[in-house]
Image (cartoon, rainbow, N blue to C red; front, side, top):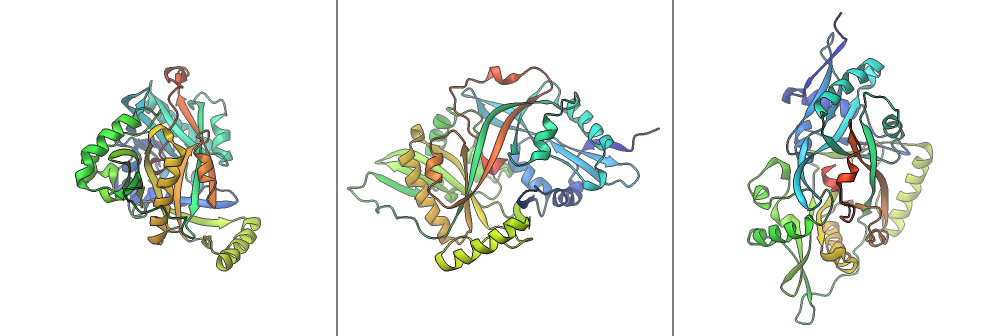
Length: 371
């Protein structure tokens, strides 16, 4: 007798069902949040990975998508060298098909697709269901090995920060937006700095100019360059992904509903970010491609302040910035009013623990805009 479910690679015409599946499986907590993918599921997937490897479980009788997982590949720096690495995400089962057989069929396919590879994955620290499942001890699941934590700050764009002095002959620092003439300089700076981090995603700025889907929604003027004299010392970009990926505040717990009302009352009186009502989306922009020579806190603080003020002027509600939890620049982010999310980073494998391969003198870096 044939199994109730079968698995196959996801297809373009699955997009609508996958969007519905994402909507049906929000991140539940004090604030229930959903990370949506309209108008096309695969637009966001192509920003997360360069080589797609998305699989779906289909119920034979109804021909409905019951579950999904993605383990595509992207170029990142490992021990200073660029290589293709898998990133696992979107392991979801529709509530209508929450059964052991669905999971078994999906993970059987997962194991075959993974083969001898290892992969990165990130799980929110308050996602108890996912964290409990990775420690279940089932042989059909890969083993998840801890490899660092991430702290992401959703900085409330409320009022201008103290402005930096205007560039002058007395000021040795100058911040400006990038243009097409900066491409070679940016690529050189990027390749010098990114390889000093573990798992920093590779960027090719020529591909950005040429409209590669991995850079969807980005233009060169989204980048900010910081100079000391004529020397480039820091760089970062902002990325509005709302045309293909959205964050919806689905629901609040009873306690958070009260806290939201108090927060919004305070914000109206004294200035602050208004938390969206249940069902509404948040207007935000992500900081990414962050590179600062020697991870200098003062340089980072100057650059962040400049970008914060620009984003505020553009009428966004929040600026999202994430760094490894052990990064000393976290204390700069803590100076801003923000909603803080904690995440755990894992290396997953069906075989031996691969962590011995990674030189721990390279500090971890994860790109929140590509998770």
